[in-house]
Amino acid sequence: MKKIIAMMVLVVMSATLMIGCGTKETAAEKEPVTEKTSNELTKVVISEFRNLSWLPVYVAYQNGYFQEEGLAPEFVLYKDGPIAFQGMHGGDSQFCLLSQEPVLKAEQEGLDSSIIYSVLDTRLYGFVGAKDIKSVKDLKGQAIFAGMPGSAPYSFVSAILKEGGLDPQKDVTFVNLDYSASMTALSQGKIKASYINVDNRIEIQSMDVNMLVDTSNPADAAKYLKADVFTGEIITTTGEFASKNPEVVQDFVNAVHKGTKWINEHSAEEVAKLVAPLFQGMEEDVLAKKITILKGAITKTGYISEESQTAVENFAIKNGVINASIPYNQIIDMQFVKTIK
Image 1 (cartoon, rainbow, N blue to C red):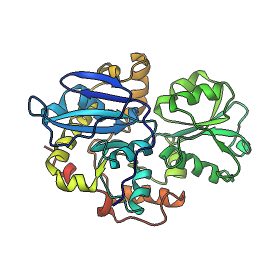
Image 2 (cartoon, one colour; image 1 turned 60 degrees about the horizontal axis):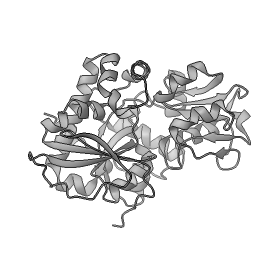
Image 3 (cartoon, rainbow, N blue to C red; image 1 turned 180 degrees about the vertical axis):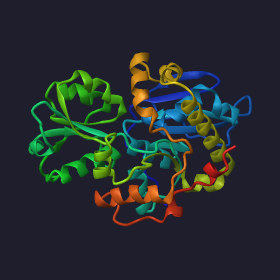
Image 4 (cartoon, rainbow, N blue to C red; image 1 turned 90 degrees about the vertical axis):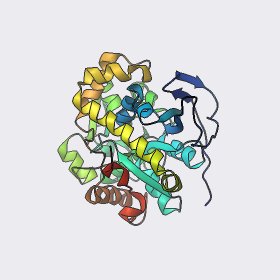
C-alpha cells in the first residue's frame, strides 16, 4: 500500500514524561515503537496540531497516565489535521489527533486506518462574519478562512456556504492562514468570515462581528450536523499498527481514558492550571473560560456508536468528502474502549 508522505512540518515538539518538553525544527526520527527507554517504557509518537478538543490526551500527558501504562509519548506538531494524518501514515508517528473527514476520505482511497477513541460527543464549530456580513449570502466574492482543503473545518464551512446558496468553489476565496491568525485577519478586514472553534469563542466576545452559525446552538447543530451526538473529533492509528500492536494501543486508550475521567471530575480552572504549560502564550484564566465552553462536550466513554458514525458519514457524503458509506467495523475499532482497565 502506497504511503502518503507528509507535505510540511511547521514545528516539532519532542516531549517525554521523563524529561519534559523540548522543541526542534525537524521531523521526529522514525524509530520502531518497540524501542524501550532507559526505564523500560515503550516510546509512542503522536501527530497533532495542538487544539483543546483533544484535552483528554493532554491531561493524560500532564498527569503521567501514559507512563503509568508503560508508554513514553512524544508529540509532533503540524499545521493542520490532514497533514498530521499524512505524517502518521508516512511513518512519523503511531497515533494521530484529528477529525474524521481526512480519515474517511483516505479509507475510501485505500489507506487503512483504525479510529480507536472519540474525545468529544459533539462538534463545537462556528462560522463568524465581519460586522457588515449579515448572512452567508453576503459572502459572495469575499475572502474567508476555513482551514485547509480536506480538513473538517473546510468541510463544515463548505456545507454552510452550500446551505446559504453559494458555490464554495466559485463564489468565495479560501485564504491560507494559521488557525491562530484567523481572528486577527478578520479584525483587520483581510478576510470577511472565519471558521471558529472553542479556541476563538472568547476572543470574538470583544470583536464587532456576527455569528453566522454556531453548532453549540441546538438549532444549528440539527441543521448542519443532523445529530445530537456527532463524534467527529477522534484519535486514530493505522490499521496495520492496531493489528500488530494491540497491547500498545490498549495502553494508549487506557491512558487517554484516565485523562477523560479526570477532566469530568475536576473544574475548568483545575484543568486549565494542569495543561497551561502545553498552551504557552495563553493566559490561564482565558484557558479556563475556553475549557468551560468545551467541558460539556467532552466524552464520558470514548465510544463511537453506529448511530453516531452514520451521522458523521452522512455529513461527509453530503459535502463530497466521501461518495459512499464505509462499513462501521472497517474503520471504527471500539475493542480497546470496551476493554479499558
